Length: 216
Image (cartoon, rainbow, N blue to C red):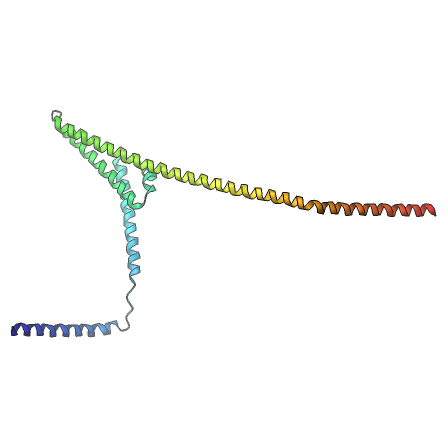
């Protein structure tokens, strides 16, 4: 018991002295040193590196799917509708189905004709992979068609809204012009009456001048 106590006290003393030495050695090293960088820079760098890695993986997957027999136009239109993670996921599913179909075809070519059960299983597996590929392609094309339809619908909606705005503004302008014409009628009549009075005044002055000339 005493031996254990002595060992424990020695270990505690050694740990305290080691901690003191470490703090003493670390304090002059930190004097005048630059403060550590914030964790945000590392986070942004790691996120940028992860995005670059995902893009590289997507392009590599795209080329492998082209080699597997997929159409480039279909993948450009259908896979780019989704996010990058979803596009990679669907691309990996397509690649797995292509590999499974290729494996089944290779095994079927090596299977002899009298192995009926094995050929039946291979035929069922081939139909499964082919049907899965067809269903996934139809799904991707359907989403692409829905996305295109939504884009066209948005375009048509914007055009209709612009036309309605123009029609409303034009109707307001026409009503304002009609109102101004209605309000301007008394003013126009007043100016016409003033002009007619001025003309009558000029005519009367001319008649007076003529009468004076004739009287002389």
